[in-house]
Length: 246
Ligand code: ADP
Ligand code: MG
Image 1 (cartoon, rainbow, N blue to C red):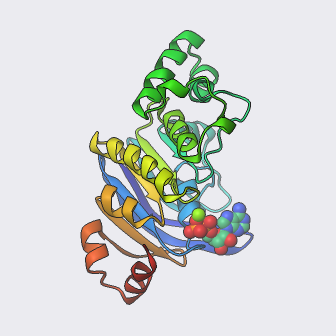
Image 2 (cartoon, protein in one colour; image 1 turned 90 degrees about the vertical axis):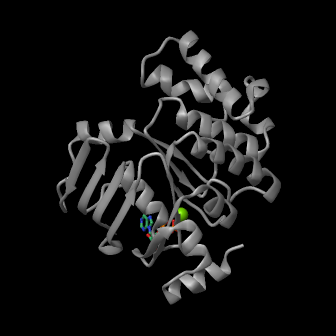
């Protein structure tokens, strides 16, 4: 579903991704693990082109883009890629002055041009899916972190993306609230949603992700089925990092 080949990215002359290759198969979850600063967020932002890579190739479904330094990709191609991805952030990033259901509807109305009635109907269905139908009219500030993140997941799913990108979706949450979010992501995985998720949450990676990619210093060290990577890491760097996860 997603293929990244030789992705390079620099900020102000400092290269932080050094030619990354990652393949995310359709209908499966791929976890991205690695120390803080290893480039996980940057790599996710390169997939939905919030950051344009400097070099390499990104393929997402039928769309394929080759990047060259100083040659930003065509805006139409960026839009086509972006429309196929949904993004969930560590800090939820809900609109504070919109209720839960308005947060989920917003993109359907403003980007897709749906009527408010149709958008609200779909948004209520998605809130039901994440277990928050009864919180539809609640303000984000009245919701727990776990509930806010579940609204954010519903919002990301609203335009029916082909891929869900998650950047440490549970790291701002206490363990009990993180478990609610893991349960929702596990349900989506069981339905065959394609996902790429950066996480420090061993439970999330081991339970939900078929494949895990270990990134360090902007390069892939090891990419294997999660059960094998966690049980029997091959590279000494992976061994050291996996030992720090809980
Ligand atoms: P991770 O998500 O694995 O913690 P990041 O992708 O956030 O890692 O960061 C990788 C490296 O890129 C870090 O050294 C970080 O300081 C740098 N970096 C990320 N975004 C920017 C930016 N917008 N400007 C400058 N440096 C950045
Ligand atoms: Mg990050």
